[in-house]
Length: 77
Image 1 (spheres, helix red, strand yellow):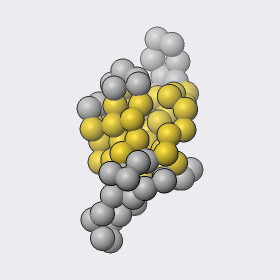
Image 2: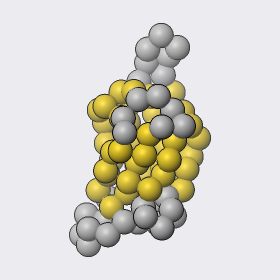
Image 3: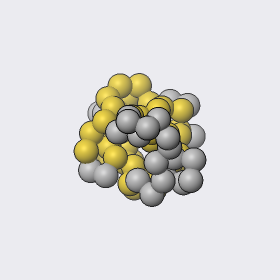
Image 4: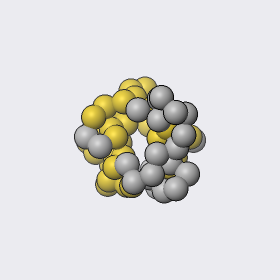
């Protein structure tokens, strides 16, 4: 399980109803978007039932993070 927390850069508050997706970098099975597109809840969190990986996090279609994705990743937008 991977959790992406989306936080406002200006206010520091969690952002609700943001569309989050994860692009997994290549590997044995190849890369691509995984886990579908998930909206953040009232805590600003989007939960994905995927294994930890290297990849990119997109929020509302724009890339905000690239690197190791495991546990909880906080993304400031």
